[in-house]
Image 1 (cartoon, rainbow, N blue to C red):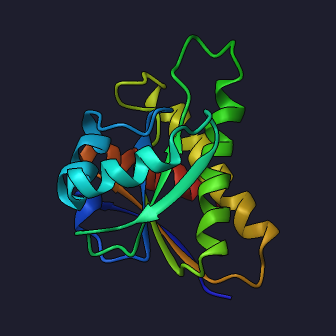
Image 2: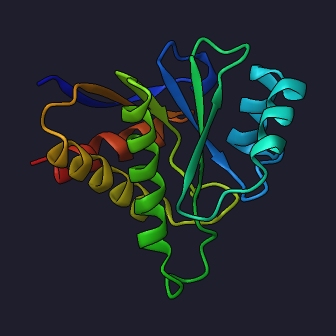
Image 3: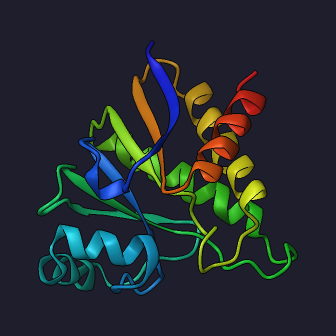
Amino acid sequence: MSVNIEVRKIGITELDVDAIVNAANPSLSHGGGVCGAVFRDAGADELSKACSEIGYCKTGKAVITPGFNLKARYIIHAVGPVWSGGENNEENLLYDAYANSLAIAKDNACTSIAFPVISSGIYGYPKREAWKVAVKSCRDFISDNPDYDIEIIFAVLSDGSKRMGDKTISEVMK
């Protein structure tokens, strides 16, 4: 089995992987942040059409579209929770957003996937806690799928996020 989890300082749309994960909103519409970059670089018109055909995605769930103009074959749209103090099942919903994205990747024979740190931008999830949930969900998926080889990359834009991610991976994956 070959599984690797790493953090790279790179825009997620630049990665040559089987699937990238979009930090999507429930309506699967063009947004800001990661979502805006994904729509822009994939081709906003084509991606908007594909997403409107799907229509809606519940928080904690994920859906898939083609990658269109990206190097990635697929875009997995995962809807993370909006942080509201941690009293509204945010941790479980965030965990599920990662787990469901990985399950879709497996169903589509992806051997590499790139994630943003879902919900940690405009959705306000505290970054350190978001990292812990992300890595735990990936770790558990790997543990539950021992015969599935996948490379998991977290794409971040700052040195601070990379350091935080590397530290979290080393702590959670012990």
